Length: 322
Ligand code: ADP
Ligand code: MG
Image (cartoon, rainbow, N blue to C red; front, side, top):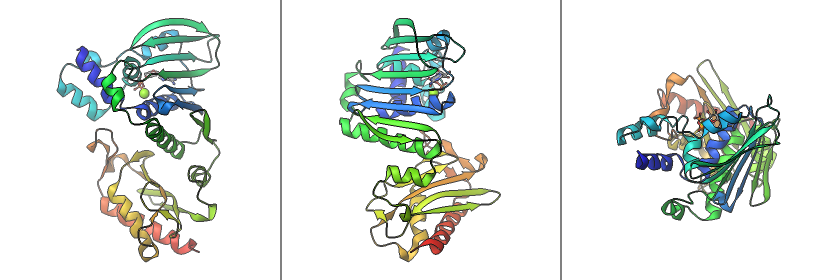
């Protein structure tokens, strides 16, 4: 099913930012707490993710790019299933098929590391190398063998901006050392001990500490936490409003307006506050499968969450507005 495989690869890999997302998730899965991400030309020329995780031995490295499930994909229906329920074990193999890839890895129990070079999914070189513990993956020339896809990528700066947004989400949801280098410039260096407000001040340098207010609600069923901005501090759009459910980023159209309703009269017209908001809820009270990429969720009790959020925002503002 050569054609289906190519479609499948295209489904996982939409562009540089989705590659970065998959690679960093792998690093986190590998228990890394020190991750460096670097991109060139918006990620079109180079995406490099370097971690200090558990690493892979030679045979694991070779296995990691094999398609785990492609043998089972024969029909469009199968493809749909994959799209709905996620591509476990498909990211690296998909990425390797549409790029030039270099992988270097060493588990701590090995003396030496292994380096693989892969071109369009085929291993073209393998050698032993000296390397530190962990894994470094470099993706060069994304979509070099699918010109139609390459043409559909946005400008370097637009693709780079998407990558930056992904990095910011990882920073919000993980307390790790995370360094981000874009076009040879260090953009972020988050460290594992930074609190949410400190991270916000890095990501939004236009803010001062005083502009932000912490929110917190905790009962036996729902936990809501995060930071919001003072009513006079905001943007003319909602690009600084981010919601996470059980530490997973979601698109939550309805929650954006609930957040703003919490401000009530205080919010000036056409100002949209900052809000980095984490909702924790029992997994059986939220359905994450309503959207293929799982960005949209459906709560069993949407009303309750909305009223709690509004209340926690209103109360935090009442205590802290100046
Ligand atoms: P999945 O993450 O769904 O298992 P991937 O294609 O993303 O599938 O990765 C395949 C496998 O390669 C992983 O299951 C893991 O064993 C290994 N792997 C990938 N990235 C890393 C990494 N940074 N460190 C250690 N192992 C990794
Ligand atoms: Mg993965």
